[in-house]
Image 1 (cartoon, rainbow, N blue to C red):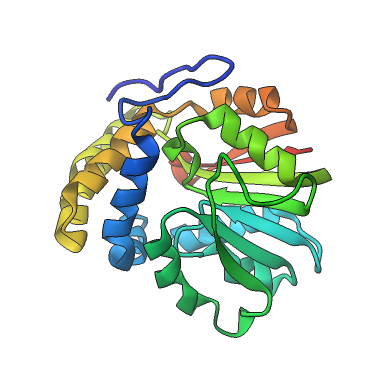
Image 2: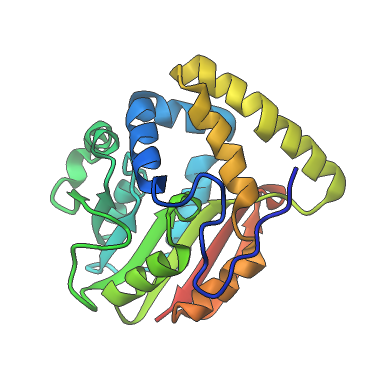
Length: 246
C-alpha cells in the first residue's frame, strides 16, 4: 500500500481523485450510498464508529448553549450527540440526499439541531459566529485541505476549538498489513454488496492511503492558523482525532 502523500504548505490535492472534479465526484458518490451509508459504517467499523464520535465530541468540550458546526455532516451522526450536551448543533453538507436521510436522527432535538446546505470551502456563516467546529471523515474528501481548515477557523470565535476525526493507516507493521488487506480488499467487496456501489468503497481506502499522515495534518492545521494542534490515535492506530484552538 502506498505511503501517504506529503503535500506542500497550501496542501495541493492529496490523491488522484482530487482536483477540479473532486467535489462533483464526492457529492455524486455519497448521494448514491446515502440510504445504506450508516449501515455500512457500522459494519466496517464493527459498531465502533459511534464511540469514536463520542470521543471527538468530548474533545470539543463545548459548553451548554454553545453554537457548533458539524462540517461535512453527512447523515448527521454528530448532531444528537452535541444537542445532548446542550449545544446548538448545525450540520453543513453539500450532499443533500445524505442530510435528508439524517433528518430522522434529530428526533426530540429538532430545536437544537438543524441541517444547512453548504460547501466546506465557503461556509455560509459570518466570521467568528460559532464556538466550535467538528468534522468526521471529511478532510480526505476535500479539494483544498488548507483552505478548508482556514475556512473553519474563520467562522470560529477566538478561543474556540476544532476537532477532526479521520481514518488513518496504522503504524505497526504486521497490523498495517492486516488492515491493508481488510480495508483495501474486504471493505470494497462488502461495500459493493451492501450499497450496490463498489466504486465508492474502492475510493475509500485509496483516499485514506493518499491522505496526509497525522503528523503532516498537524503541520497543515498550524499553517492554517490553528494553535495547540495535536492528535490522538484510537482503534490500534486506525483512527486519529486532531484538535486545535483559534
